[in-house]
Length: 352
Image (cartoon, rainbow, N blue to C red; front, side, top):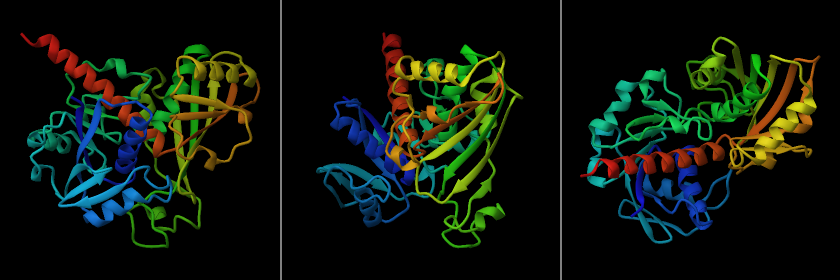
């Protein structure tokens, strides 16, 4: 029997998770996962429509329908709820193995625990939490999923930018050594920005039109990196700029290395890792790409080796692309499968 998943919050990430799972199954992967329920405040008609048609990722590669509070994918039903609070759904009665919390509305442990109290056996959050203690673990798949024991009930999937940066910094710190890091995130517009100037956010910059300006926004990326790579604590700085594109973002990374190196050596290290220990997680290219080329790319990071440069012998500049929706949604599925296999393997060992 497949593991049963539910999605709470069916926005950009929630819809990408469902689509990514469907596409993986078409490719013969992740057949052990099944989405059986969605909770989203939008009307069922809108939910069906935005599943079928997507301005970023195209038409859903299956027949989409809806009836009687159910979303139908090639005739297979997913129960749809419109509950405003976690307690309004009996998650235990659904028989789910994991809830994917994709609304981004529950950043503290006290708030996260509401899902457990309402019967969800375990929850994977599509966001970094306000503190490390808010969850039992924060996972960047491919780097630290081995820290999971199977006993966890609340896990964070970190952020899309953390999933992009951590594998690269982990690798270069291990091979060359890192003294300091400065990162600028060049991120596509998000739905916390208005199309035209409007009273949209407490951050005054995010009251400005998303498609008329490049807009600096606050970021917790440095905290997220240090949480995953504590050996870099106090040595990472980050800022972020929102740009007028629908999807695909980039990290402009400056690294002061511990020893002398060169752009050629750094590229060689990254290229080799993309083909070996980080294969499927990190990709490498030297082609003359634009951001749109990485739309719907499942990697957490795509290193653009044509943009790697060195200033002196110990200051390196990297550019890494990432589909901030699709790559992250695929990592949620990777963590889900790994965690559930581990949890149920542990249960089987404990059974009399």
